[in-house]
Image (cartoon, rainbow, N blue to C red):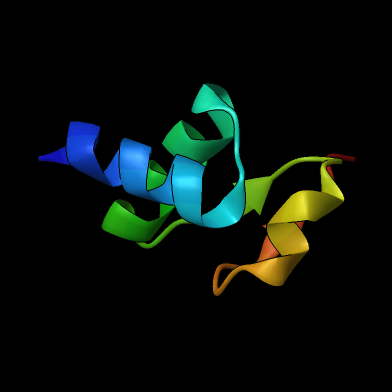
Length: 51
């Protein structure tokens, strides 16, 4: 269940709720994260900056 993953990622990576949600959904569906937030660079998912 994604709710438990949100709590796990929030604690593990010191993310707030919306960052944990973006990460969990990107991981689940094989997506990239589009954000200026460089905190995502330390994860196993590629981050792209918006154009």
